[in-house]
Amino acid sequence: MSCSHDDVRHYLQEHPDFFLHEPALAASLALPSEGPGGTVSLAQHQANLLRGQLQAMEEKFAQLLQIGRQNDQLAERMHRLALALIGAETRPQVRQILTRTLTEEFAVPTVRLGLPGWLAAELPETLAAFARTLSEVHVGSPPHPALAAWLGADVASCAVLPLPVPEEGVGLLALGSPEPQRFYPAMGTVFLRRIGELAAAALARCREAA
Image (tube, rainbow, N blue to C red; front, side, top):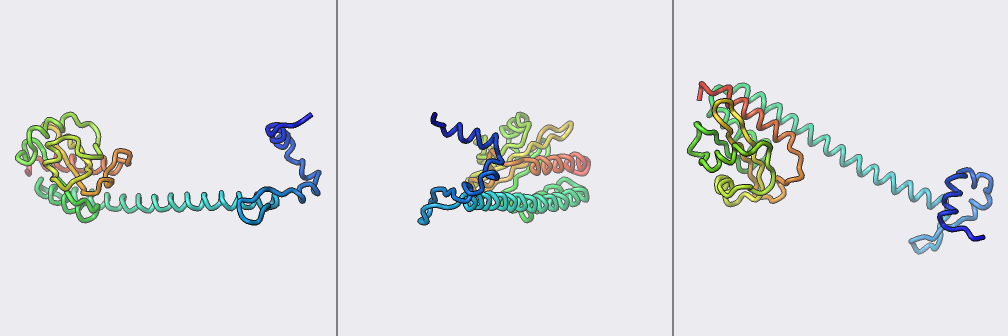
């Protein structure tokens, strides 16, 4: 009676101590090698597998460590931005702080800020209408022709943040880059949402000092 591949695998899974009772067989086993050596021992094959798994784990850990460091840097920049906005007394100061911080600390080449009733000349009605339909941060290519014109011809990707200000409407904070993959649809938007919330809160607080 012949045994299939699955039969052998199932038997060894059910009897993990098989080779403990057959040490001579375990020592004599050899597996085909992908290299020029022809065959390798079972123990060497297992060691090679473990080395490969360890290398993959080390690479994954290095990636996670790099992501953690980047998030720490972003959190520190967010903290400095929040402190600066807390100290703003007028809306022009809010605009100056946002533009300077996003350009210098977050390395965003293009920053645009507009709010209905304030800086209205910089927020065309078509964009004001678009802002009212935007409930979440948009990342990717400019989603509206007027937005593309507002940002400039050299902008290939952008992040558009809605700024809801009570009793005034919804403004826009748009970040643009000539790099097509600087802002892309699958990227995380947690920090972008927080920037938008900070900007909207600062604009609402400085309403009377506009």
